Image 1: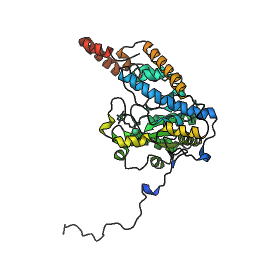
Image 2 (image 1 turned 45 degrees about the horizontal axis):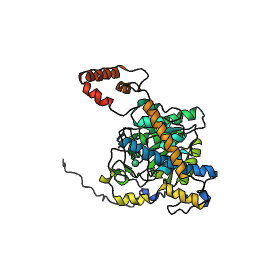
Image 3 (image 1 turned 90 degrees about the vertical axis):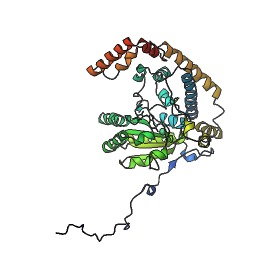
Image 4 (image 1 turned 60 degrees about the vertical axis):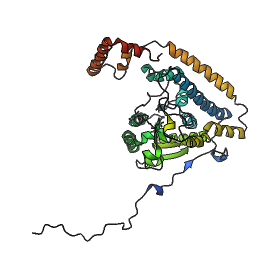
Length: 385
Ligand SMILES: Cc1ncc(C[n+]2csc(CCOP(=O)(O)OP(=O)(O)O)c2C)c(N)n1
Ligand SMILES: [Mg+2]
C-alpha cells in the first residue's frame, strides 16, 4: 500500500469571505463641551444653576484632595495614594448621576464620588493608611475598594442580580480602569450581566495606562466600548474630560440598566499623575504626551462653559479650597485619633470567625515577632490612625 500523503488539490487562500472587523463598528465619542470650550446647547443637561456650580466644586475637591493626600504621603502619613488628577470630570460626572441608594464598587481613584455618596473623609484617609477598619465604608452604599484589578466586576453583577430579584429601584455602579478590561473577571462579570439583564452600570475610566502599560500595548481593541457588544451589552463611549457629557452618559446608562439593560460606559481620559505615589511615569511616557492632555484639563474646560453661560461669577474658588482644606485637616486629626490597632488586625477581617488556617498563620506571625522584636518596632513605625 502506498503510504505517501495524498496530494491535495485545494488551493488555500482568500476566497472572498468578508470577516467582520472592529473597523466595521462605528463608535462615536459623545461630548457636550469641546476642548475649545464651545458646546452643543441641545445636549446641556437640565440642571439648576447651583447644580452646575456644584459639579465644579466637586471637581475642585477631587483636585485639592489629590494634592493634599499626595503631600501627606510624602510626609510619611499615608501608605500610598492613587491620584485622580486629570480624571475629575469622569469621577464627578459619574458620581453625581447616581442615586444615593445605588451601590458603588470602587477601585481607588474616585475620592470625590465616594465623598459625595457619604463616605467620611477620615475613613478615606485611614484606608490609605492601611487601616482595615476603614474598609467598612461607613455611612455609604459603597463596597470595599477592589485593589485586585477587575475582581469586583462579577461581584457587582451578583449584587445587581440581587437587586433585580428584590425588585429594587437601584443599580450597581462599578468603577474600573482600562487595564481591568483585560482581566478574566471583567469578561465573566459582563457576560453574566448580559445574560441576566441586571441593573448594572460598568464605568471604565480609560486613562490610557495600566501602570506603565499603554492602552495600545495592552489590547488590540480600538475601544473599550466595543467589548460590551460581544456580551449583548450596550455601551457608550464618552469624552471623560467633559463633565456634562459624562453626567449625561451615566444618567442614560443608569436608566437603561434599571430597565434591564446593563451598560458599559467608556470614559476616555488620561491619568495625568503617577499611577500611585510609588511610580515614576517619566520612565515610560513623554512630556509632550502629558502636556497634550494638560491642554484638555477638565476643570478649565468646564470653567469656560460656566463663564460662557454666566454662572462663573458666583463660584468662589478660593472659598471652596479653604473650606475643603479645613475639612481635610480635621479629617487628618480625626484619623490620628483613631484607636491604634495591632498588626494582628490584618487577620480579623476576612471571615466572621477566624478559620484554622488563618489562626495557624497568626500564631506563626506572633512567634516570629517574639523572636525578632526589632521587626515589630519597624511595623510600629508605620503611619496609622
Ligand atoms: C489582579 C491584579 N493584577 C495586578 C495588579 C497590580 N496592579 C495594580 S493597579 C494595576 C493597573 C491597573 O490599571 P487600570 O485598570 O487601567 O487602572 P488605573 O490604575 O489606570 O486607573 C495593576 C496591574 C493588581 N492589583 N491586581
Ligand atoms: Mg488605566
